[in-house]
Length: 490
Image (cartoon, rainbow, N blue to C red):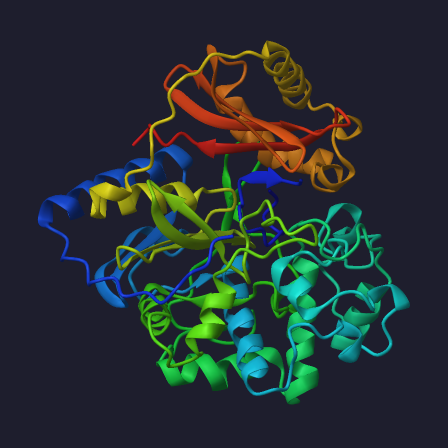
């Protein structure tokens, strides 16, 4: 993805009922010197492989810090090392604080989950009447993505270098089209949480970030967590970076204060504060258990089926080796991050990086396995490919992308919004050239979900290996394309 899109999975492009009961996981044992040394070796090797300037890794047991360690540089120009206090940008991980704030207001009777959002946005178009607050929280509203394609460019309504008032921003969102009936589909849209932040302001009379400070950050002692600001003097702030077309490090792209203050992911935090957040989520200090359960339950679509994103309210709920994991990632302005809470085991792992396009999800999942062997990501063994034409279709697509061709005519409309020539050349292209043309292409997984056949292939070129996801919809259009780290490479 681009460095300017707050996606929950910063590397993979996806378009397309698990209920979390009360958690009584016992505290995890302290990490041994051998485990810490293994984590050090892996993180340092991953940084070298991905050209990441700095990484912060946290391992917690029910909020107690087992490891909080910095690697590399927070600021390359000033040669400042990463440390546990270093502040990174949240990207979409910040959405989970917004969902918690909404649930606080639900508990107080100030917001109803099944309310039409028109109740809070009375000037909205009539087409918004069917959108409920739950649809915003779960990304099932059908609203278009404001941070996509030409909309954030110089001629777009959301040009990222311009400032807008909150009312002006709302008016622009109200002019966006609705892409599907609310609740019929799941599609991750930053628009939803931008609106939730404005809703908090309308209901409480306080800017959403001020409300988060008052109700969440201050009570938990998260003294360093705050809204992004280019103007303020902020101790321990890391610099964000991206790699240019020649794989040279450069500073992050600049955006206006408006887009560094929206509720879809514009916070600073560090490892120490996230440990306090993790600890609070094991009890009822902030929210009732019923509210936490609602946040951590996969939202069901209108047809009664769980949404294909396994998404609750700002958290993804899944399992690894049968162990429940509640997680989310983010990417914004030269930063990526990921938090995974293995609630059956009482372990949480966080990785924060200051490089656009870095894969903190892989770091988190491998570190979790090094901290607890039961959480080692499963191996992806080769399987027989009974539909080889799909592999050939993928190869043709990758050939065109590697050549810099515009492939938007071959993909779904939703994916076309993301796969601009700039994105393909600058971000996808950088990952693609590591493994394409490949020395080998092997199928490791194939599933059909929500009408999309998704195949995962291992691409190997010399010493590099990546997992490429490729999904075709019933209409023959490409609905999924993405690159992930190979879990077998550690």
